[in-house]
Length: 562
Ligand SMILES: Cc1ncc(COP(=O)(O)O)c(C=O)c1O
Image (cartoon, rainbow, N blue to C red; front, side):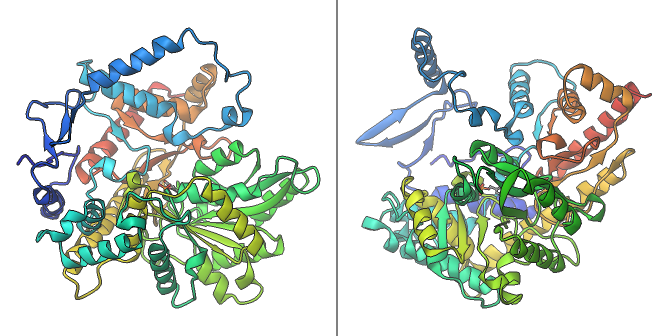
């Protein structure tokens, strides 16, 4: 049979990379020939037609047909007087912004299409370093994870000799927890019980035995959904404390999910600056300042901490975490611990400490504080962004409020069972002695150590560039270098009505094909300029990207020299 040999751009050519690739894609060999075939006439993505061919269901859809359908819809729509218009649209939706998928990314996609249609540019490919999407950048999926997903989706594979027994065991346990024994059935709204129990066991082990109750675990479609579900509890259309709107403290720079969600929920954003000179650590006097400035304007109800940090790549010390916990206790703040990068810690001397563990070890009253912590299968060594798996652990929440939270998530029915399955593998990976253990451990270590190498390479390269400073990328998947711009460039940007870092980022994109996100999308101190790049491109692409950036920056500085 034709195998699904879909080649991701910039795929690793190392021996290990090839091994992973073969292992993952050999899975297709285990599928019956009738299940998936790639049309032999499909030579490029625009005409690719994948067909399912079993006797009762045969369909082949091309993108041209889909495009035709879309055009028909828009023709009909043009005669219709819209009910929802920009005049009556929810104003909060107009206010919200999400830089990671903003205008630069739209332009990058246009440029890709221009290149495909033969337009000549000073570069031949677009590098999308704008988003922490590991697989999109050629990072490979972990075999065991995909095997369990495959079996849960297609239980016939339980009979396949190509599937290892430990993958079958995991899949059987999950299917046993699914209604009707199928991943196609709805689960309970907070997720399949057996998976919630596995998550609780994982947390308990991670935190050195501090108990975790599976009923406090809520599975969600990526951490984003969990964060937004808990955040929603704090909204108050009629004002928070008396007439004041509720406010939430978030780090600046921050991951724009927070600013976007707060805008959407009509809540106040209370930004506290991270200390760039101290590798983006938390500065308690700055947190006090931010709180005091905001307290007269809004009712500050919660604090968000992202650890390891996005976009800053910092890993908080235990002392730093203890200080925040004490501050949150004093101000009676609900704590959001965004810990989606808990596996991504690279720098010597850095260690991930969970908020839950630290709070518990600090004893009363801190071990009674309300906390929601979040994890995801999109990050770490998994990078399974598109599968949409995540969880929230909600600790010490008032029982009636927790019941309301459960009620509110029930309106969405449930996260996908495939996403839940992915989370299950992350918290319940192969154990020593099981058939898949060696391969799983080798793949996990390879991915994490390769990310650690890339983290160092990126920071070192920026630090070698004139006008750039970059803090150590201690963890997560990003660097957030600071760069200096000549006064002429700043003046030109202002003349064009753009913020200087956006002006720079558009020039970089048009001249090099590299898409990064300007610092203003995450927040930065006034009159400082940064951008965020991921460390995810494969080594060759990363070297090419950094080389292009360096040449571009030198030319840009010359062009706008004072
Ligand atoms: C800090 C942080 N939190 C949450 C998320 C959301 O991840 P997901 O919804 O894919 O689990 C991301 C994604 O990049 C992130 O960087």
